[in-house]
Amino acid sequence: MSRHGVLGVSTSYPQTYDATVLYPIPRAIGREHIAWPAVKLAIGVDWWQAFEVSWLNPQGISQVATARISVPANSPNIIESKSLKLYLNSLNLSEFASWQAVEDTITADLSNCVGMAITVQLFDLMAQPLEPSFLIQDLPGECIDTALDDRTTKLELVAHPDARLLSSVREDIASEGQDIEQSHQLYCNLLRSNCPVTNQPDWGSVAIAMSTQISVNKANLLAYILSYRQHNGFHEQCVEQIFADISQYFKPSKLMVRAWYTRRGGIDINPCRVSDLALLPKPSRLVRQ
Image (cartoon, rainbow, N blue to C red; front, side, top):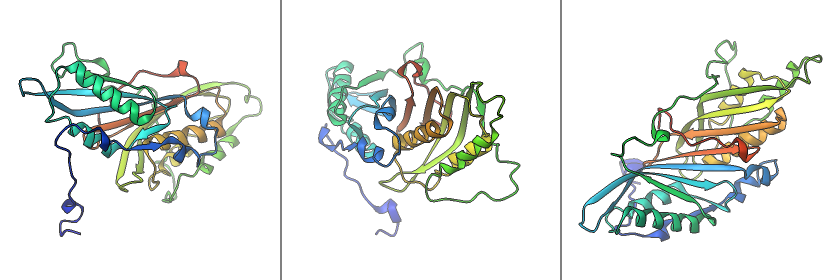
């Protein structure tokens, strides 16, 4: 290894348009380790937001745009994120006749990679009014980031997500009120996991909206989210594991689990899983993105 460590490891970037660098990863690889029906994990969307999209127009002038890529959760594959970065970089010095030609090309290539039709939207940085969903938004609901501040013992670092941390919430059910369903809208900015390819940390915010008869212990829920800190998993797989564990322990009639991961290589990934497509929200962007 170079004396500069990983900084000395070079990567070969394509200099011209090259769709062959895209690398599909079967969703089944992650879902086979989750104790929940795969069909219930396949309701939702993965929004990829890219901020380093560029190509040449017929005059040889660089064009720039932001892009939103919407991948259905029931697609056979996801795209390895670094391969998407390399693919987008391959457009930088390649000529396209129009913005629509770029959008059509990306749509066709990524659809082929994930094995299903996806949606790609390019946005002009100078457009007025700006695309609302690209403006910084606040998360609705209650933040649980401080729910463990009164804890008297140190929270242990665990190697893998521990769903048992959720189980004690059932002790909080009052016998006379257990038939009353309540709606909860909670979020946490402390989600951290590791990329299974590079082992680099991935940071994000996660929101949970659900209707359940089981009372919610926010401290236990936060401890559960923090149990992902040393877990190696793709963004989509982490959200699906959270969705499965919340489903199992809270038995909600309605559930949405959604994450906004911070940008890497000019791309942020935002998976969302819902119990019903009618609950699917609009894409959005947070301050850390």
